[in-house]
Picture (cartoon, rainbow, N blue to C red):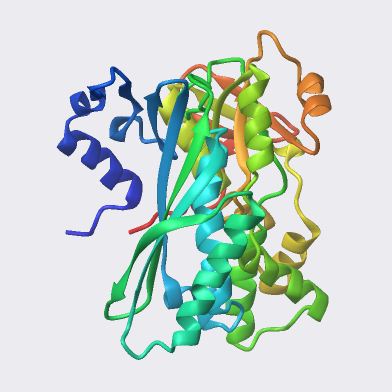
Length: 346
């Protein structure tokens, strides 16, 4: 029997662990109450624990260390892997609209890993943490059969303000914080080059590689969204745009109509599509790890123009609909499933 992919495993895990356990709370001797607001059954970017005067947001993510295809193709260093690890974790905190307050790093390494390589992973992680106003505050290390790196990011939110995947309602406006598909285009392009394919300019190659070496977590925007009072759901696009639209739809019990005319295609994605013979739409919607924020806004109180005036450079994609169908709507009114292959960790 084939192994389950990540979404199926998370659903199975929520059942296995029993969603009633999400109703956990505890009281300290001084009377302070800690209560779990969002746990496994929420299937969100992070867990949320209510504490006196503040909500603690906690999320974990793992990257493959030297198993990264971009590392194997010579496009990432050990330093870059550490940097990427922290950004991947902080992006989950950003999607909850939370302020980063610390990162835990676990690094397991083969015994023949040079000390300089170990140090470079940690230096990269430290630079990324400091870039977002936080620090590496702990973790674990030890030997393993190969390099594995994992992180846990902590964030703080004002009580009840953490953004969830599950709040979208029919009529809400759907936005994404910028162009998507660049990280997937980079991965596909360097695979194409490794196989002997035609190359683009050195400047284009550098920019493509930077999407992995120096990704960005949209922490400031997440904080703005959480403080706006009009955002109904949010998630980062670390599984790609298609998967993220589908996951918010499932969590919220809605569908989405995405207007094909509103989807911007980066010139980088367009160039890679042409040189590799791939579909630009597939790259834009597929499993691209761009760490953008996909979010919905209350359509009953806020217009698209209001949102675009308030949040710089966000792109209006469409609207939430009744039912669970997610569709791409073209200019002639025809519809189709959202293109691309959603990223599925197996």
